[in-house]
Length: 310
View 1 (cartoon, rainbow, N blue to C red):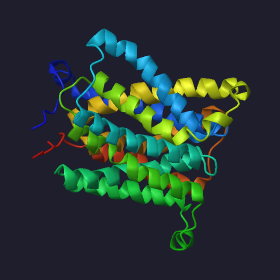
View 2: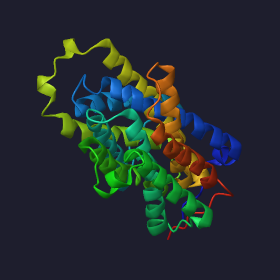
View 3: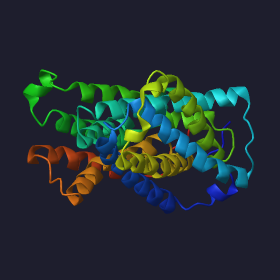
View 4: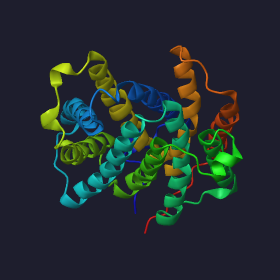
């Protein structure tokens, strides 16, 4: 049986603090859509992700050494970390590739489908009870996402008029939806720092295989400062910090409610883009953004449901 919290310190963490940290994580992840859109053409997506994961792993290693030392996990446990990282690597590759033919707002909206998919995974594989309110909120969130994707046009929905980037990112979302349920299954009371590091380290392995054909042709001298700055930002904040916070919060409020914070992404992306002078999107999609933003409030209703594991 898995314990809900990894250690005594995390069990004492107030619930309000967990939710505040998840709002912070949502703002950071939202910014990654905008940053990713800005740098995705600077390098091949697999190479860009490899650098992101390497920088994140190297940045986290000294903290882990200072904490409890770098202890190599058992093979079975390492395989679990590899399964988690395979989901995140597949998702991020789809994201950076998709951003070459779609927008940051579109990807942030499509990502709001993840809580619904993750909820299904958690209900089937973990026995997590979603409840009436949370099922309703998931349905509303998915409706809002579809509204934005198809611009509130029923004819476009019936004709399934969607670009290839949106479809590719949607495929990545099915991978990412498995992330928090897998964290719940794989965790064996190791520290969140150790788990985050090994997920990133195994991710480097997957990305090395994926990027190997492109690496010899990379003109490193031609890579712009903007791309390097974006990689460092994504590695430090959108990878190390958000991975850690997501792993930690999963044990307090459950996989579905953690993923529900992605419903804030469209609103935050809109605000970030507006602050950067990119203006606002067409008014027709704003009702969809409002629906997915309000859905997360309903999803946080009540106490966290315990996860049943056999």
